[in-house]
Length: 85
Length: 85
Image (tube, rainbow over all chains, first blue to last red):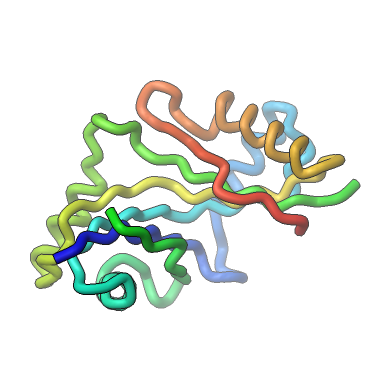
C-alpha cells in the first residue's frame, strides 16, 4: 500500500486567548524586533500514513484530528499538504 | 510600511529524539489508527511583520528564528510561506 506524508497545522481558534503567541511577541519586542505586530503559535504535525490514495490519507488524518490531535473547543486544524512518501 | 504574514515551521532535527511525535504515534495506534507509520510534532508560527518587502520580512524572521524561536542544537526551521497581510 502506498505511503503518504500528510502535514497538518493545528492553531488556536480565532478569538481564543493565545498565551504562547503573546509570550513570543513580547520576547521578540524585548529583543528589539519591534516590527513584529502579532504572533501566533500552533503545532505542525507530520504524519506518515499508509493509504490507498492521497484522498484516503487526508480523510484518515482528518478523523485523527477530530478524535485526538486537535482540541475541538479551542483549536482549528487544516491539512497543509499531502505528498507521496 | 506594508505588513507581511510569515509562517514558519520549527521541527525536531532529523535523528534527534522526538518524544512528542512518539507519543502521538502511540496514542493513534491505541485508538486504532494502525496505518500511521510515523509522526513528528513541531511548531507552526505565524508572525505579522512590518517590512519594506517580503524578502525583508523573511530575512527578519530568519534572524528571529536564529536568536530566539528555534533551538539551534535540536531544531530546524523553514519559512513555510510569506504573504501580504
